[in-house]
Image 1 (cartoon, rainbow, N blue to C red):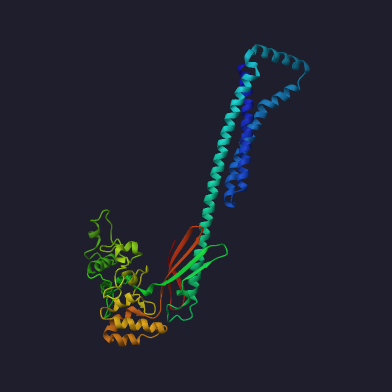
Image 2: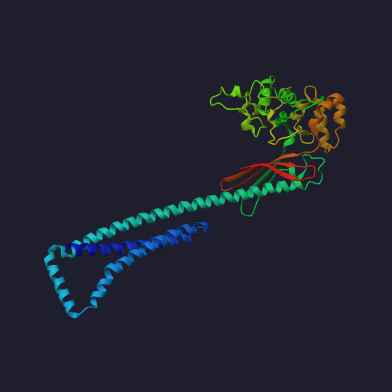
Length: 417
């Protein structure tokens, strides 16, 4: 009798589990319809697994429990009468176990437990689906913003390449004007192109200058003096030791080996200001603007307006474009007493782009001009493109360093998000 009881329970268990698996398969199939195309495959595979498991359970229930009963009904009438008599006797001997309440109660508990598991699983699947949908929406939004920012950067590169006059660059050209727009999808776009040759490039310290030309480390010292840093020897020497490939100097590897944690000099040009702040004597405070400083005083320049970092190797110094160079960079390069020359340059470019440097040679004198000539130019070769896209409180930014050749070909040197 006990075997017959458990056999019936197994029969019901297989039926319930099979139906639950089919229901889960249907649930995942419906969720697949609400997913994005690239995510539907995963949900359909899960649905197929549960459907296959449910089919196998129902098939086992049919083969082991339903089919034998159907086969027995086809036997002789005598066997059916004897089998019916035996079943009636079994119910009499079973006593309380034959009562519907005992078996139906255990089956009901089993069904309720399985339904609770199914409900919990359904809630979990729906919650996970909503979280995944939200994540996919955020990712799609991010990619839309990134594409918009990339499109603005591409537009800037195209403007630089289509410049009509490659011999002179100035601040009134189309590429130099900030651009803000809103596209049909509601994304706000911002584009700014900065002439990197408007400031002195500190990576010029990697160049060995010959002849009577001003050495790059001396030029940086003069600029730092004009910006109120009166003892720049430590910073300049440390930066030179950081950039050069030799191991001769006060601020080489043995100096930084005493740090915690220890590190080594780069032996190459700087790639960014974050790296500069690892060099002895340099910190972010040096590039903070002093709002209390009077611009009418001597040594009132701002270092942040006078120097920059162009992350590219070179065999010659990268000059300042006199048409776009900041007054702080010009004054720092020319040195003390050069205010009249800087004022003359600024006044000339207000009237129009400077296409000749002879007036600077006249104002400086031949000897001083010969020392500064490698650092002065009328065109720009290096540009910093900054593009951004905003919508619904989210944003994406792209920064591109580009180089334009004498023939007008524009190449991306570095890009970062």
